[in-house]
Every structure is written in structure tokens, then in C-alpha cells.
Length: 204
Image (cartoon, rainbow, N blue to C red; front, side, top):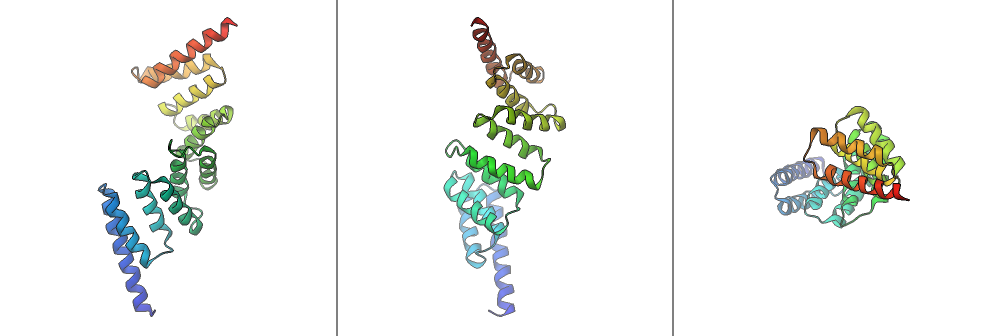
């Protein structure tokens, strides 16, 4: 292939990619995938195309296919922070529930951006889900140093404390959420459960 043909191919792939992203943005994931596929025929080793196609697949709950594309994309560009995060999110979906693999993705992402609060939160959620409550709390504490009023992190720290039978501390975190969000159903329910567990604990 001469340089002119090569340039034309790259240009065509770029145009197809642009159309695919527009369709993805408009919520037309099946159509977007068909354009990603056409672009990938012209540029099969394009990590960005593989990553963007994975996003559409994930939006369609085609998690195995999405993971396959994240894997291919990361093999070409292993330091793609967003791909690591989205691969991890894919693995944490209840249909997949592969939390330990997800944890590895979030840890790798944090190796690239150690202070990213989103990645720290996700690492904390994964640690909590596999029973590593103290390590989860350490992640949540790092997030709360930067975002002290993040209700999701406050809730999940409270839940991790409850799992460790540290009920007074857990209830204090649920109360902190309820100060700003008095109707937060998770905080109300988990506070109630923590109080019940505490009362049972005190009976023995």
C-alpha cells in the first residue's frame, strides 16, 4: 500500500469513528457498533476504536464482548486509565460479579493516577464486597479527605464499619448523610440495621 492509499484509509477510519461516536452519544449503540466494526476493518489495531466499541457493548449489557474489547485495547495501550476503570466497572456489574479482577483494574488505574478519588472509591467498593473492610475504609478515608461530603462514600464507609461490628461509628456516618439527605433510603435502612445489630450484640 502506497502512502496515499494509507492516508486515505486512515482518513476513512477516522470518519467512521466520528460517526460511531455520534451514534454512541445519541444512544444508538447497535448502529454505533456497526460503524466501529467498519472502522476496525480499516484500522484493526486502533486501541481507541476498540475502547470506544467496548463502551457501546457495555451499554448494551454485553459484558463478555465488552471485556474482550477492553482486553484488546489495553494490550495495545496498557496505560489507558479510562479503559482500566471501565473494564473494572464491567467486572463489578452484578451479572459478572468478578470483584477481585475488578480490584486489580482499579489498582492498576491508581498506579497511573494515585490520587484519583473516583478510582479510590471504586477500589474501596470492591474491597468491601470481598470482605476486606479495613482496607476499604482506608480507601474511603482518602476520598473523604478530598470530598468530605460525598454521600456514597460516607454510606459505604458506614457499611464497612458495620461489617466490622463498629456500630457506633457506622451510625455516626449514616447520621452524617441524613443531615444533608434526611430521606436517603440507604442511610435510613442501614442505620436501622446497625442499631438492631448493636442491640443484639449487647444482649450477649
